[in-house]
Image (tube, rainbow, N blue to C red; front, side, top):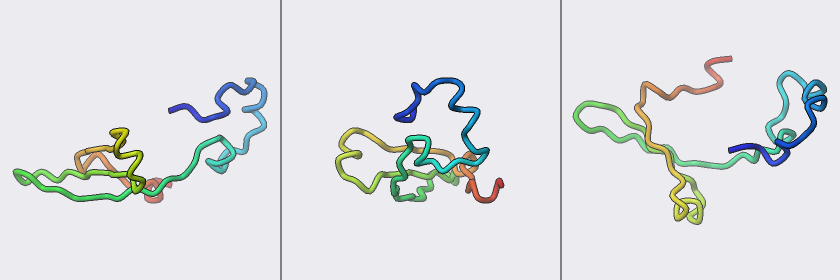
Length: 75
């Protein structure tokens, strides 16, 4: 999903700090619940939004556990 201000001029991006605050880019942080599910010895993670309205809009993610990492560990 594109941020709210994705239509800004190209020159504006040159003035953005190297590690900008996501809110300055138009993104909003959201709380999601992570559920670990196992089937046939394969680990899966299910990410569910805490807001029920988002869940009604079919907002969820299912991923192999090995495909997910903590971004803080990659810095």
